[in-house]
Image (cartoon, rainbow, N blue to C red; front, side):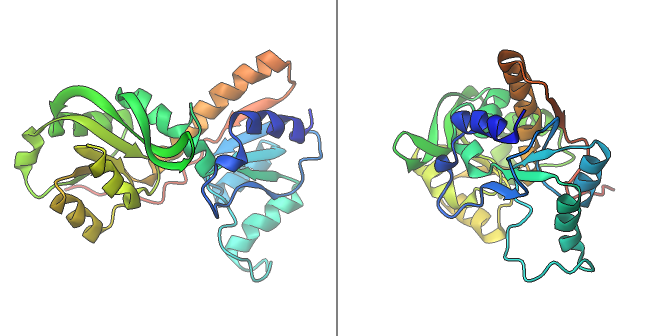
Length: 267
């Protein structure tokens, strides 16, 4: 099948126009005007992702985080970042980016997070266009902050989980309304608070932002950015369904290499 046929089907589900203003999106490397037999879905494209794609003879990578996020000054091979782009071009591997549009779309990443955490009666957290928004806010079965934190850690299979609180006393605080935004959504914490969230889940929370959250009376959980890897599993599932529906002769692969740059040591 043509890569363009697959991407047209994808954009019917997750249009580029849903993306936040200024977001990097769509085709970034190569062409969609070619036949594809293998499509790899990945969260990031790093050296190990490219090696995996070459080994598996992949024709197209659908990725959440754009490999080219800052302007390129040259394509000198001695620069390690450049070698990623050079290898992709050399092996005719196209790269298509779906970033904030998959966060915003209905039945997208933030909805999948809510399903896993049993967050119900959801609404979008921050409006990005009429009828659409990024992040989600909803209800959970009443439980303590500590109980919910354990659930988040277990659901995402985390080595560790950062809790935004000054005191262990907060672990016993009862909660029933939470907000979530995958990736780095700390800028939306005020909207979470205004909409009644008692806990906000997002990654990459800054030190001073965490203090500001607590001043507003908002607790938070920071599971890191890498929980977005759920993107890979859920999209491959969806694409397998489409493959059956459309009669496509194409193989969809979930990236198996880790691109999480953080590890933790314990006493």
